[in-house]
Length: 325
Image (tube, rainbow, N blue to C red):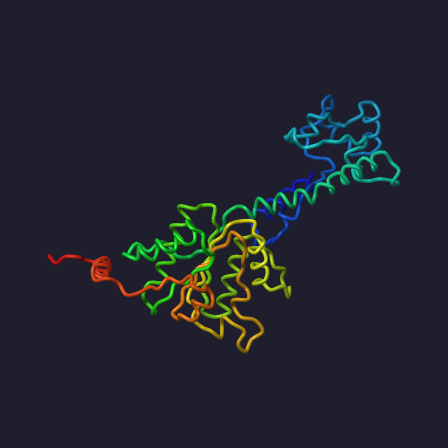
């Protein structure tokens, strides 16, 4: 009874604390309990039930009544959907067998064999359900102070989501000209209007920062990298998103360093780890037109300076007090 409770609590802990017990809950597809909690034995006084821990008394009782406890008592609060099997054994010998030819042992083997055949089906169903649920790795809230830029936002939506004539597009312009803010506004519009899309944001400032972002994406995707494993988290994320199970939008922000993006003096460039699938969308922000061309071909949105009215509105929104007393 204590082991049954311990097993249940352990599974609940593993489900609630995935970081402490990575993969434990998701790796279990079935459970077999030999004896569960019971209310007491019908027709037996409490003292006699306690004394039934003596094997001879237990055997004597079972020889007369078949069970120490009846089914309704021995299956305490177990759902009807859970399969139950009868073993002609005492509670204390429930999991002890003398030889593989015993009828009870054969019953247990048949049950476990049946469960084993369902493991792959259960695992695939879990993976599909988990993969099809939109995930988000985005740490920036909408910027209410961004004004204008409706032309750039309309172009992104039209090319990527309406006409669907490309999967990759680049926002290019001088530093500080609102490329990142335009991408951020677009992300939140997609999240609101196209909820089936998963959305991920990765900064391309350095390979280490890029890797940390991929670790965050791996967590929200439920990918568990084994401690001490040589398996690269960048490859794990790339392979999962490239599987094409779910629609996703990826923002690669500040893609400015040519040597970082491509294989220049290093084994692999950042672009080598970007995923690709039939339902994928990728938006780059960069200061360099050549980078924009290399990652998005002719699908480029040039971000120019603001119009006078847009700049005035932005300044007004940035001021704490808009009017003088």
